[in-house]
Picture 1 (cartoon, helix red, strand yellow):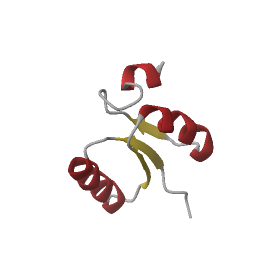
Picture 2 (tube, helix red, strand yellow):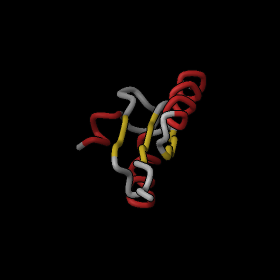
Picture 3 (cartoon, rainbow, N blue to C red):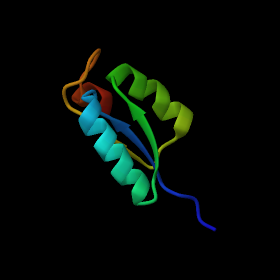
Picture 4 (cartoon, rainbow, N blue to C red):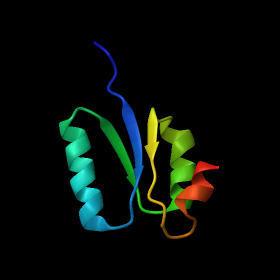
Length: 68
């Protein structure tokens, strides 16, 4: 059995985040969700995701800085 791909997802708007997380999980992905850029940086090293999806405008730091 193969491992499900893991997505680290950042979105600070609760309704949109919920919809995206639910849909990604329905498609068979493991999902870790964060609401701010600094938390994404910490989680990146903890969960070792296959893909990171970033919101551009987030609290504490923006998606561009996180990507760098």
